Each structure stands twice: as structure tokens, then as C-alpha cells.
Length: 238
Image 1 (spheres, one colour):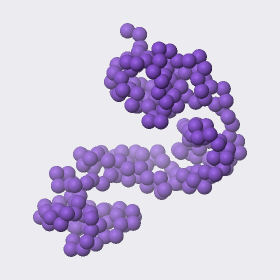
Image 2 (cartoon, rainbow, N blue to C red; image 1 turned 90 degrees about the vertical axis):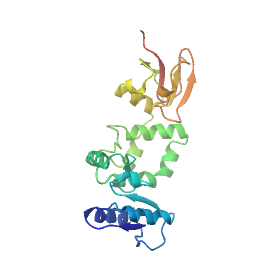
Image 3 (cartoon, rainbow, N blue to C red; image 1 turned 60 degrees about the vertical axis):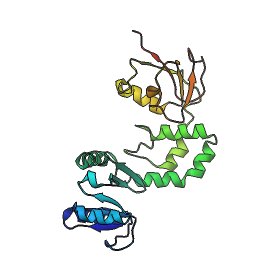
Image 4 (cartoon, rainbow, N blue to C red; image 1 turned 60 degrees about the horizontal axis):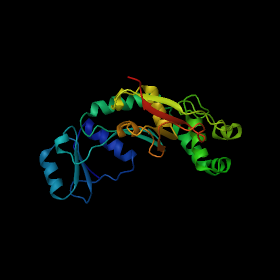
């Protein structure tokens, strides 16, 4: 990675790159990517002439790629990008997210990785395993990322809360615009394992659900549904 420029902007870029493990070289060295921290248009032109992709700080019109703001809870990384529209907005969002995520969140990720075999043995079926992990990581759950407990303790105490499948939850949409969904409705869509819906429900609404959620077109949901969260999506009464 080529890094050009002096001052605070260049120093900040250098710290970010070095922390990510990049090897920083000079302008004349071989590289695939470059950051021009002082917006030098002539330098950008020289680098592009060599086929190098360039990021010019605070000059989105000169950028071939942009760098997101990073929340680092290694091995957990959260990247916030605006496509170069506003680095200030990305920074503000990063600061808010950093305040929500505990500094030791990475320890939870590592513990879950180490416990993969035990989790698979506890829930051999993939769907049941995913739902158990979702319950544990949910707000207020034993592994809630905002204040996670110990994975071993969760495994020891985990129950089969889904043994009795609840009836499908009714969700009645009021328009074809997904932005009109309430926060609760958006959360239900994001969490649903299965969606029963009328044929004329817009794709824009259904796209708010998980990609792996089953979708069933029907006039009414079945009386008994499989384990997990099922939604019955129809239109609200006029």
C-alpha cells in the first residue's frame, strides 16, 4: 500500500493501515492500492497512470475506492461506509456503535468459535442450532453482546424453549413502502424463520426478511407451524 502526504490526516491513515497489517511503501514501489492523504491531484494522476487504485482523502471525485470507518473488537469488525459521501457521518456512527459494543466483545466471538463442536453436538439439526444461538444472542439473552455471559454456562443451562411452536405472528402491512414498517415489525421480519404471506405482498417488504427464511404464498397460515418464529403477512384492513 502506497501512502502519500504529511500531517494529521496522513498519520491517522498510517495508524489505521498498520493496525490492519498493511505494508506501507513509497510512491515508486510496486503496489495495487494507494492513499493520497493531501489530495494532490498530480500524485493521483501519476498513480492511476500505473494502474494503481487510489483513495484521495476528502476528495471523493478522485477516489477509486473508499475506506469505511471501523469499529474494532477483534475478531469482530464493524465497517461503516457512505461511499465517500460523508466521512463525518461515518465517524459519528462509528462513535455511537463503539459506545454500544463492549471492549471485550471479541472474547465472545472466540468462545463461540471454540465451542462449535459442543454447540453442534447439543443441537445436531442446523435450524435448531441457529435458533438456539439466536435466542442466546438476543437482547437480554445469556449471550447478549452488550453484556455477554460465559458460553460454557449457556451450554450447560440451555433449554429447548422452541419445543412447543407458537402460532404464527400476524403482521399487517399498510403500504408497499418498507419504510412504513414499525421498528417491531422490522425486527420480526429480520428474526422470522418462516413467512406465510399473501401473493400480492410487495417484494420490497419481503426483502426485509432474512434471505434464508422460508417463504410460503398462501391465503392463510396453517394451524400448526414448525418450530421457530413464523409470520403471517397480509394487508391491514382499509
